[in-house]
Length: 467
Image (cartoon, rainbow, N blue to C red; front, side, top):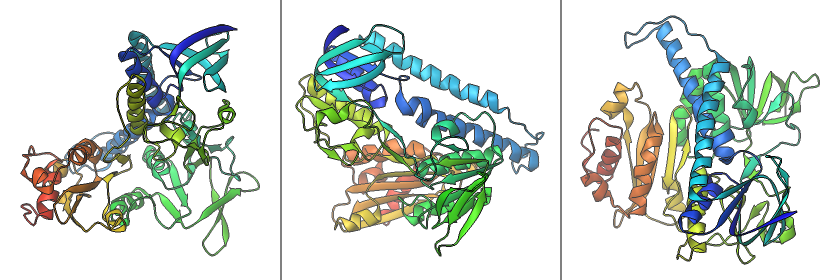
C-alpha cells in the first residue's frame, strides 16, 4: 500500500471540508482532501444548490400558468407544458459547473484530492482502500486530521428508503412527477420541496407531528407561509404521525391526535424528518472521541477531545448549515497555520426557501425574553414597500429586535418574497454591533426591499415614516 504524508488531512469534500483545504493551502499548509463521492458534498450535489434550482423551475412554471389563466399585468400566453427531463438536465448542469469549479480551485491552490472512501485507522492515519479513479490504495499520514463528513437524511423506522419512499436526494432528480406526493415533516426541507412539487403539478399532502408548519419558527413568521400553502392547495395534516405504508403499499397510514387512523394515498412518500450527523461507516468510533449523541463534541476552536483532531459542520450537530461549516473550516485552517481564532459569531443566518421565504438572524422576541433581556421589537409590512408591490409580493414583513436600554440590535426576522437576500445586511448589523439609530440613519436605496429594514428600525424608535 502506497503511503503519503501531509500536514493537514481533510476527510470530506463538502462546503466545510473544501473551504478548509483551500484556506490551509493559501496559508502554505500542505493539505490532502479525501472525498468518497463528488466534491461539494450534500450542499452542491443533493442539497442547497439543486433544491434552489428546482424551486426556480417550479416558480417559473407556476408564473407561466398564471399568465395563461389571467394576468393582472396584461401578459397573455398559451398554457405551458413542463419538460421535466430538461429541467433536471438544467439543474444538473449548474451542479456540474459548481462542483467542477471547486475541483479547479483546489487544484490551483495545490491541494491534493484523493477520490475514494477514507477509513480512519488512528488520529494520524487514514486508509483509502476504495479509489474512485481505480488507483492504488493509499495510507495517508498527517499531523492534523479534520473531520468534515457532513450529514445524512433521517430514516424513519416504519418508512425505510426504497421504492415509493424517497429522501430529498431522490426528490431532487425526479424521472417523472408523481400524481400524489405525501411529505412527512413540515420543516424547511419538506416544505421547500413540497411547495415546488405542488407548483409543478403534483397533488401534495404534508403530515406533521406538531400543530404548526415550520415549528422551529414563531407563529407570526410562519403565518404567511401557511396562507400560501392553503392558496396553493397543499393539504396539511398537522398534529398527525405516519405509521408506515398501507398493506398494499399504495399510501401511508396516518394517526390523528385522537389515535384514529386513516389511509392517505401516495404515489411517492418524501420523508423529510431532518438530517443527522454522518458519524458511522468510516472508523470514527476507533478514536473514542467525546460525543453528543451522534454528533462530535468540539470546543470554541472546533477541537475534539483528541489533540490535533478537529471537526466541523454537520458532524458537530446543529445548526446544520453549509455557511456555518464553511466559516468553521476557514477558522480551523487558520488555527493550524498558527493564527489565533475562536468560534464566536454574533449570529448565524437561517433561511427557509419556501413561498414566501423566511429569514431568521439572531434573537427573536421570544428568545430575547427567555434570555432575560428587556427588548423592543417592531415590524414593517412589505405591503407598504413600493418595490415589494411592483413584484406582486406585498405579503410578509421585516422585524427587528433590540435592547430597550441602548438600542443594540439583537436580531432580525423577515418573511416575504426575496427576503433571503436581506440576510447579509441582517448578519452584518449584528456582527458590527449596530444600534437602531445606525440602521435608521443609513440611507437605503429606493425602491428596494432593503428599505423595509430601515423602516423597521425607524418604527422601533417611534419614527416610522411610511406606515
